Length: 392
Image (cartoon, rainbow, N blue to C red; front, side, top):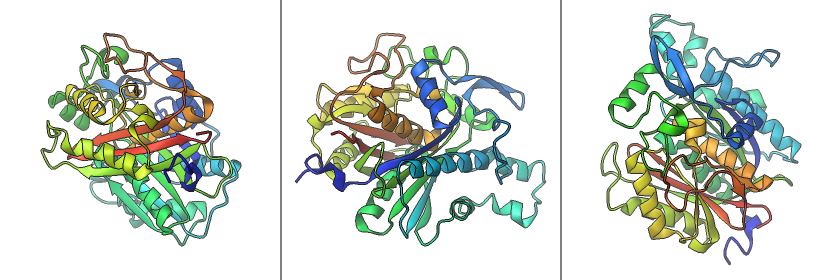
């Protein structure tokens, strides 16, 4: 029996939370992307100027969050939003609520403060905030959950997808009753932007919708973003946004910043995700691409789609709008995909130049079928997950 003949045997995504360059809350993200207006702007940080989508400070009047950094406040906000959202949709947590933290480089801004402003000296309580394992533990304590598994995933730009694959496995095996996938990446700092620019991957000036053109002619690369997103994966809700049918992660050891040109492991990743989800190539209506706008990424995703997916698949891409949020990027795009599946509109950027034929011409009405969401991280972290609508 395939997953499509019995889709509700799979866990759903019943709670969503987001902090992005569009604002604090998932609705700001949704409305911003559908508007076609990019959240990426020219910023000035420590005397350096470059394009970035950075969340504004937390709105006044919101509860004070118990963390000294932007990273921590955003992570807590997105997770609290997701839990509130899930409870409002009928989620009844089980006895073993797990949490998987996902990211790329951790709270680098807080570490800068530790080494610079504080000269390597802090109170023990503040120092603990530098340790990646602290955040998941404090999050669960804050939410009142205990008794479930907890871990962090560091898998570059594929981190959130990899966390979702693991969450699916935990739920399928009974290792956890529910899993909170909380991703955060606030690394749009001058030293990181400069390195990516020197690699030829990052566009640092111009109109973000013009310089970052996924699957279009004349792209200069990606534009950087920051975000925190949380997705609650559970079968214990009567109102999920959509279903998580499965996924795959395959390591490509070819090169630290390049994929093997023969695409072997990326093909294995896509095929593995379809196999885990028990769907066929014709069941996939949308490839929600990694879509960075770099020449290597565009060629690789086109190549693997032509090998693995149906010719009628539609490419979705939103990084020119949200910025490339590194370890949280697949979380941002997962939130958008799930909102789109429920609300009937699949988000995508409007092309500004000659584009690959499969790229959507902008937001479009949802048709039947599932979404394959890819995420590709430096170091060979290839990943893909499959989302399905509730009315499949």
